[in-house]
Length: 155
Image 1 (spheres, one colour):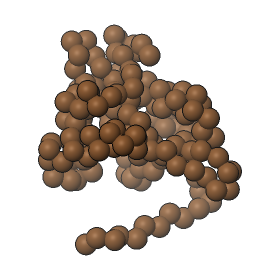
Image 2 (cartoon, one colour):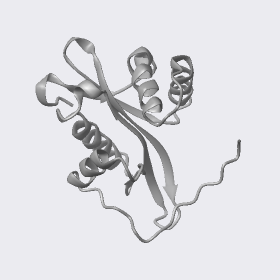
Image 3 (tube, helix red, strand yellow):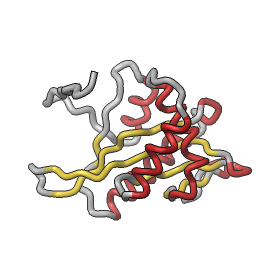
Image 4 (cartoon, helix red, strand yellow):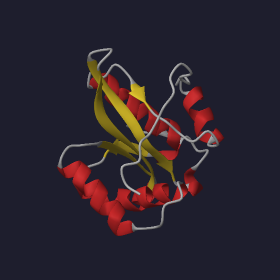
């Protein structure tokens, strides 16, 4: 998928770990996790090796990684159909507001449609207003009829 300003978005493979891992590490830092490039690379390698996630990467001129989106396959019991959880979306700070996030969201949606998923779902922090504006501009609807709970299983 070709984007604006010579940005290419394509599905990442295990051979793209060195390109995607620093972006994933920066994403984790955005959510107040400590920098740990080795952990980021190991996590992504395991997901890709076991076909547990689908990652799209945005690449700029010269091969620079500009951003990524990671999808986790799941199912909806109510719909009795496949869904995809858009768990991670990150655009490098110097590539923001250039359409990279839009390209990544569209690649995720195109993949979902092509794979027969009935919906994509995501969550983000309430304070992440720029991401929320992007999602809504791309047609995502805020769900207001369910509460989301989490149970921490580790301390």
